[in-house]
Length: 443
Ligand code: DLL
Image (tube, rainbow, N blue to C red; front, side, top):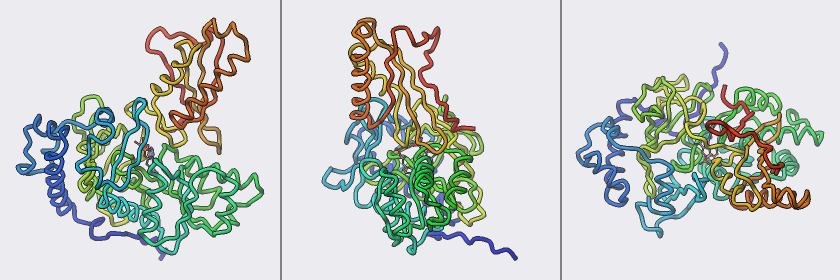
């Protein structure tokens, strides 16, 4: 008989819990969370009061639907620490990602939150078949971005050896991956393909020289074609991982060896699906917007957070044995946020920087592409005013450089900027189409 891969499960008690028991636990934890935020965060107190919901009186999970939502804009309105339930001296870590305009979205953790995160990431590693015997080459960025440190604490939790290489210096990554005998590669899917390309350019046969057998790729949308390409070129099994700063970072869901959806640790994160236009609940098998309520986070819990990510859900038991809900691969966003090389950015943020530059007319176009085996390329086309154009090519080039530098400094984003002659950009007659995304990330 063919030997079936036995699924490794980090926390069997939780991850395979009967759904009835799970729902009881979720209700208990939800009530604790509601109690906590009601007493400490004015924004949530108002949300609960508006819904006439008293934390102690909540009797079922369904009552959650009476509440409104928490959005990125709400986090911005309470930037940086207005959503905290604890004084800052109990916060031990802060991460951040881009917000809708200017200010970043903050994630704050107390000691217990870091423990919850490490637990979620330990489950991730086990789902992907990673154990303490593995050597994890962690090429997610370390810093404010949650990728690097999230994968780091999870690897430590399971006792694997972690190489905190972060992103960049690709040739050196290839050398160290081989020298240290890495068995697991963690990075964005597009960076994985860049590493494969770098190896082949350096004459290194990735398949025979590297020991990498597992890749845990996420933080940006990617297609089945990219998975096939990565698996083929690097001789590894690729797992999709999803997460967002507002909820905890990576670890909000992960594929198991069945590769049939991403498991959500529902004892920590309660998942709902809503119609993005009306906010009404949707059945699991519809495509809708994922809404998450955290059940165990302490410093900065989230009630009904609108992720803006479009998915379907299933709560049927998986062949791997887990009873935890699975979400589909992210099928797109319900807002205009772009994920460029793993960096979240809204067109409005780019607009602010570009149009604040002297000599630039208020017309622009963002063109995104992902050439085979390369990172995303963002081109920004904008237009000179007749005055700037009159000053000659050298001046125009200087402005292009200035915009490029400003974007790098304010948004951490590198882009190819072209300032075109006046009236070069087509005027629209209705809603301006400002973004051309050629990456075809959603099929
Ligand atoms: O990207 C956390 C993360 C780090 C996830 C490392 C996985 C691996 P943010 O920077 O806040 O957090 O970006 C969150 O990125 O709302 C999605 O739109 C998108 N995203 C994240 N993972 C995936 C994925 C991290 N696997 C936003 N597929 C989310 C598609 C993803 N989109």
